[in-house]
Amino acid sequence: MLLLALALAQAPEKLDLSAEKADLRVLTDGAHHYVVYNPNKGYSSDFFYGDGKTLAKLRVKGGGQEGDRRFDVTLWDPRVIPTSGASAGISMRDSGKAYEIQCGKRMTKLEVVGADDASKLLGGATFLSMMWTRLPERLLRDERGSYYFVDRFRADDPLDRRDFRLFIGMKGKMQLQSLKDVVDDSQGMIFSTRNGDLRLVANRAERGSAEAEKTVRMKWVAGRTELPLIEVTLDDYRNSRMVYTELGPYDGQRLGTPCDDLM
Figure 1 (cartoon, rainbow, N blue to C red):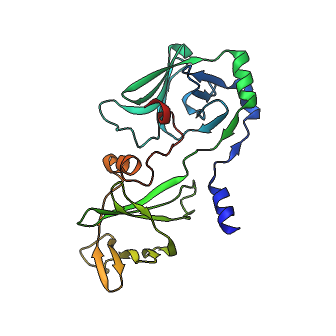
Figure 2 (cartoon, rainbow, N blue to C red):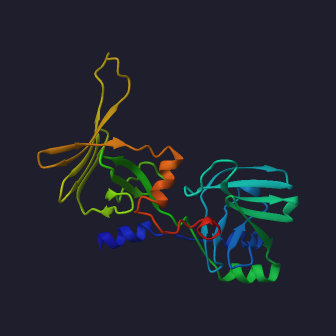
């Protein structure tokens, strides 16, 4: 029952948009891909994407607007390399006469769905919270090229830290580990499996020492054997993209963004 409750807690939630459905605008590429938003709110609106039957809320990273003439919305999608003007986003131009979705270097034009068809679609659609509910926590590697990847449930509350998972293995061949115990506190993290422990132990420098910041010792412990690990920072977009496209745990999974279909 506990596992079932946890699974249900992580599933996208149904959202009630009945109060503003009359104000929503439906856009389509003509290939059964739809974007829905409230033009009265412009780029600050919630944006939804889906097949018309199910529409999931998009995670917006930023954007800007020039009156009613134009706006740009940047979407979260770690698979898109943010270089040379490439990004994931939705744009409006010419006071609503032109819309586009950008997924990297690919641009897809959108058309406004007529009032009758839009009303029918909105009346039958299910609106959901964000589809992707995982958050990469740490990525480590040993000197042989074997990776140790930790993720958890992605919650809006930063104090809501639960449902940790641990994957171990070479790139593209990582295996989900069965966790026996998880320690997650101010002194570090320990993930215990049948074969060993992944330990991320925080050490605070002594008062008055030259070390001003907390250091972390990272290692894989199997019996009396300790294997030191190095951290692969997730702040580097190349590493973040690798997690979603090459590492293994997320390969082939839909993130609930337009770039699932239009990249």
